Amino acid sequence: MTRKRTIARKRSVLLEYTILLCSILPLVFAASASIYSLSGFGGGSFGPIGKSIVALYQRIVTIISLPIP
Image (cartoon, rainbow, N blue to C red; front, side):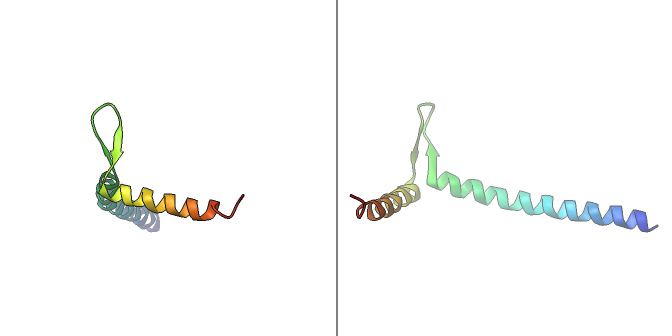
């Protein structure tokens, strides 16, 4: 009887993780689509949010590399 309970517990935990993963993945895909958008077969471009992230990254790299001669 305890073996069946253990198996049932393991299955319920696996189901919980599966439901959690399936509920988070659409949010991740939506966020990545707003940062980087594919435009046809030639390649992609950064969306409006992605452009601001790239600009912030360029500022940080410029600030870090300025003191180095």
